Length: 513
Ligand SMILES: [Zn+2]
Image (cartoon, rainbow, N blue to C red; front, top):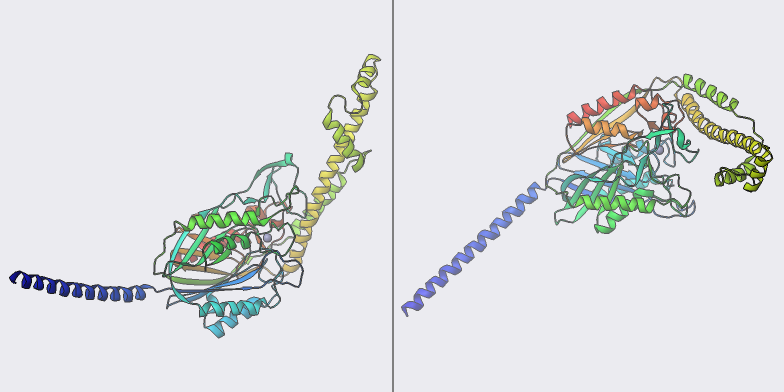
């Protein structure tokens, strides 16, 4: 009996204790829930809309406008990415797009126009004429989808899918790789330029751990194309698809980097159809790989610095004169030759096959030797001279094609710049958590991005080109001092002094973030 009462008491105490601790645990979890909510300061929302122009023929894969709205209660900003070549100036996005989209977003959605970052991937796909309205619609959708997120930043690595498209020539000049003209002959090339294998990554996770969005920055011209020649978002479309297919419910947004002189590998290939899909898939897999090491936190500062600056315009008058003089000189160095293309190809095969007896059976050469005649040897020396002259003419023709294409660009920019000393550009500095971005409205070449990153006070600083406008190529001062026989130093408005001015401005903005 006594034992029973004792046991009963112990049992009651146990129940009380359990109840108390359950209550305590419940209260604790309630408190934790509240406090974790209170710390989930940043919200993000994403949306994408298909902007592919399906009226212009075959579509290989869709082109998108994607919007990412970020709001931490203090600052609201939007990042918009488009699968297009440029924002205004060239391609299907016409003048007026930026002001229309930014004004409408500010007026209707209360996001300051200065906090809007719009990046074009620079793929050469064709988008719908109403892409402006679809852009605003995408931002509206993203704003409706705002949810609390955790934020993480990191980097990935990819060096297999791209190459620098400028070649250092033995004569000290630089040439570049375009489909508009031939590559310079191998024996004239001394070296190639740098690449940037770093992928900048921002990861936004929902509070349940699922990935909401992956924002990635990388430098490559997405111009490889697809085997069927159809409309395509190119490397970027495939990279984003790999990420979205593997992280269900997520959206991948691409910010083009300093791709001015960076081409996809095999861009000049002729043995197989060039194909962006394997290159994009490799990039996507490298990002998925890097994401495994990117941890997220539930608090992130958002800061946007928006500044305008005037950059010095180039005056190409001297360059036009020197290129025209070079064009004339090259034309006048064409050599006389007995052969034409048909005989050149036939002779090349024979002379490459047999160095000693190229023109006939060896017996004929031996017969000549026995009779002390030099008929065959004389024929070979005439043919060899004609082949050499013909080949030299071919190289001159290739050079003339390069000069003509680039002279055309230089002249176009000289007309456009007439009377103007400077060109106005908008530069954004953005901080999201530990990620810092510097933007530029043109095709920055890769060395500029490498310089800004090296000088940056914080890691995870990335340079986003092709943003909030388009002022053509923005090469280094050194590249601009080239002879004008490469696209980047011809398809530009800028004078060499621009580079240090911009790099200093970028450093100044990064200090403010
Ligand atoms: Zn380009």
